Length: 145
Image (cartoon, rainbow, N blue to C red):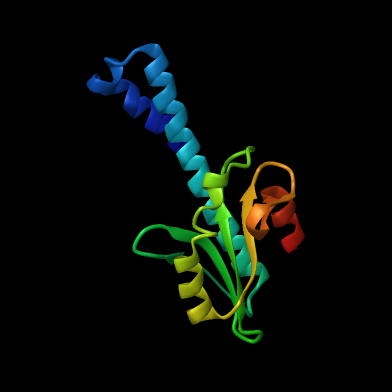
């Protein structure tokens, strides 16, 4: 598996082996978490595209930062914006792009009104300040079918 190959490669690296056990464990867990997060983003994007063939689903990049997913409905002239986080915790830093007024204004200009701002993560559904809705990613994916 890719994960095993990556870890094996790290273990053979001289610089990595010079780190303490605690540091090696931290680096290994951080890398694996990053890989899982990117995989989750790709899965959410693909499944959302497949479930919404009449809508455009894409990553929207800015000079600094991005929306992990935009679901644009050209017929309705509106969009939803998403952040995808491989986390079970809800933290304000996770939705910083969703509340960035400059990013939101650029998005509204190109894709119409923003009808929802969501963070998909592995925790419980909830609404937080600024109109941000946290949704459980598994429930979201199940709901697409």
